[in-house]
Length: 445
Image (cartoon, rainbow, N blue to C red; front, side, top):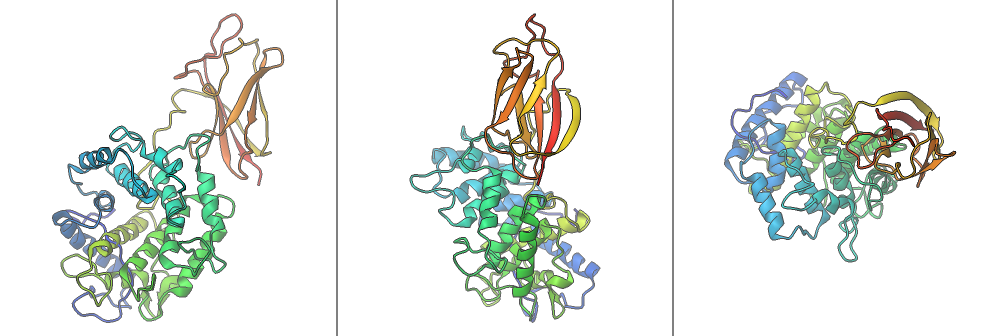
């Protein structure tokens, strides 16, 4: 990311207009060149960074997300304060979105949400249950941000968890309205700009997943259709022309490799970035609506994130990057599987969803030396697929059977491990398997 930020940096969500200019709105005109507009974005990042470093904001978690994306220092006490808050609550939050927001903040700060204050916050998400409440009790928001949080570092989800990635993705896909948008209640009301943009953020890494690309395209078309004609902004939640809606739209588009300044998102010369900058004040804050200068907390945080999302999009080549240009992506979790030098077999394509594999040995192997720790199948997201293993054919082969079908079009890898396992495969004479093996395979569509 281009660095012009010298002080501190928060993150803001920004919404829409750039029609008139008074005490708010940077001097950005509809005929500004793309380079000039990008310079305005960088200047706004610099200005808002100064504000964020010197003022409290709506949420410390979202503030940290912005600061990290801007490569600025975060508050030294953030992780310590977050841990103390979790301990005081005995690891309990009523809303699943609280767990999700905190996981994203902890991940951004370089912490470990699997063990903070003795609590596994990831498990609180993928196995969320609170009395009769499930992950959908806040509407589709809980599902959307579960996926965003789990993907913030491509965290693995154990087999047989209540909500795996496939469940979360399919729930979002199935909830899309016929017009291409999403609603908080899940296809039971009019489509909403904010929720639609958030769904796009969650789906950004999954364009190759069956049905996602079409749903994303439909959502993008709907957002373009409802964009304001007078200033390039958006209306949402009964709020006429607000900052947060344009912010979420920019973040969602950029995560999916779509330019918010493109012709599709330009109306009468005004694009979504024009709209965002029109909410900026001289002190680096952003207002929720232009008739309320005092309402700046959430809008400034979201605007900051939107500015940084566009900066990251430009810096990464203004193209789709499998969701990695999302401002909520912070790299890859270290996966325990690749902890040894495997002998790799040729990958297989167009495999049946119920495929049973046989691993054949040149010597008989001992009874009881095979289990689902040393023989595993992992999907492309690092999650173990549930399997059963048994020794067959007079102790000369291992049979590997999926407990549930593999997902269409997905890539998996079969591993036979010899390191960091409690049980090692041995021949009847006691010789240990010297080198692990792996083989990738892709399920037919």
